[in-house]
Image (cartoon, rainbow, N blue to C red; front, side, top):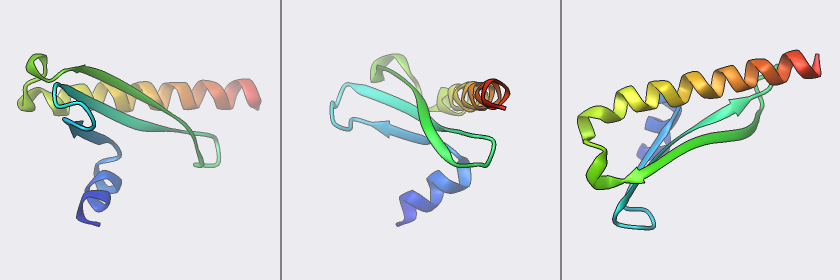
Length: 78
């Protein structure tokens, strides 16, 4: 439950070694105009290439991309 609370608070998820010990993944939800989650965007890379101190910057780019996709979906659907 603590992990889910952190994910909700930050707005994104980071996994290291799940399910592959050599992979890190960062994901964020894509929301429609009503705020409902309709999809997700994620990036994955070899863990040896993503240093923990770089995660926040990568996560911000994933969040920005998820918001942009959601905004574009709203415009197209609206």
